Image (cartoon, rainbow, N blue to C red; front, side, top):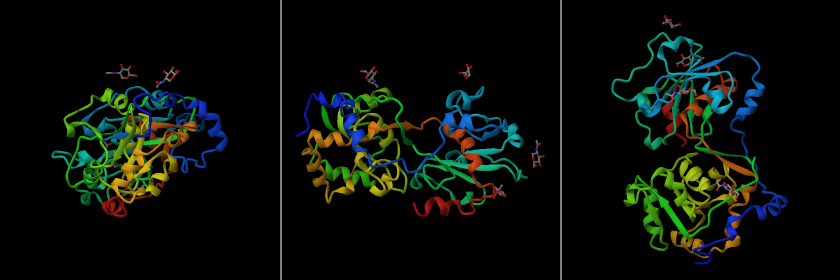
Length: 348
Ligand SMILES: *[C@@H]1O[C@H](CO)[C@@H](O)[C@H](O)[C@H]1NC(C)=O
Ligand SMILES: *[C@@H]1O[C@H](CO)[C@@H](O)[C@H](O)[C@H]1NC(C)=O
Ligand SMILES: *[C@@H]1O[C@H](CO)[C@@H](O)[C@H](O)[C@H]1NC(C)=O
Ligand SMILES: *[C@@H]1O[C@H](CO)[C@@H](O)[C@H](O)[C@H]1NC(C)=O
């Protein structure tokens, strides 16, 4: 083991390295500005015309408090009204439908005739593999809200944003590698990888699958003690990069070893030197050797991007719905997904 354990004082203060890395430059910029930030939005929207977004049903039947001007108060997004009152259907500019509940027994849609100017949004953050019965929803929706970058409302699990506070602490590392997993299925690509990989390197596995569950407030502190985190997606699809990377790795301050779409796909969203891709190696054994033989100077390179960027996580449905208002002015006003299933399932 080359990386120092159990105590690593040098990892505690990346700021000392800051000036060096600022001079070197990171050679990478956020390629697409995903959303105007909340504050820009508040400044640039001058007309006092509200966009009203009707949440037809709450994702996972989990209603959230949307009283008051929630978009302004929580996210600094102006002129955006969220409602979950179906009586407001005719007063709503946008109606948003979360996919999971569309297929439940007893679920019903607004009755015809449909206001031709009203835009219906299909919202879904699951991968195609976990998205059932899409065929019957062709020709219904005008816009999509998904993790796919080519959605009308692109809604990633997280994003890098320019750094505001020049500070980053990571706790001392005491162990090499961990993985938290609840859904462990033999057919998953990640499980096949893990079975081979763990022959060569010990992985501390947490979560339901290993009968070592972590409480939600224990997750990040636990992971942050590890140098590396296995950010293995449960299925492999274009742009499907979830909280396993954004939260469990980046927020915890552990370097992600990713299994998911190809490296180039990750590099659309994050710097090339912020992660390790399992496909960078010819075999699981090579990857294990690489991690085992890494020294601290090499390890620290995976943190350079943190001099310029912060990690922003999206995990509140209210923010996602408020962001519909931010995107609205830039979206096509005459659009229909005549083949929603083809769009989402194909080319993914
Ligand atoms: C909902 O939010 C409003 C405004 O922030 C607050 O005044 C109210 O107490 C909240 N209601 C509940 C039930 O939490
Ligand atoms: C809502 O609008 C539709 C279509 O414009 C109309 O047919 C319907 O009567 C309206 N419903 C109410 C409750 O106003
Ligand atoms: C980071 O370090 C600063 C100064 O030592 C401290 O005030 C702050 O609470 C720390 N933040 C985290 C997230 O640990
Ligand atoms: C929205 O989709 C519906 C259903 O396909 C369609 O009838 C309507 O014309 C679309 N609205 C706009 C403004 O394109």
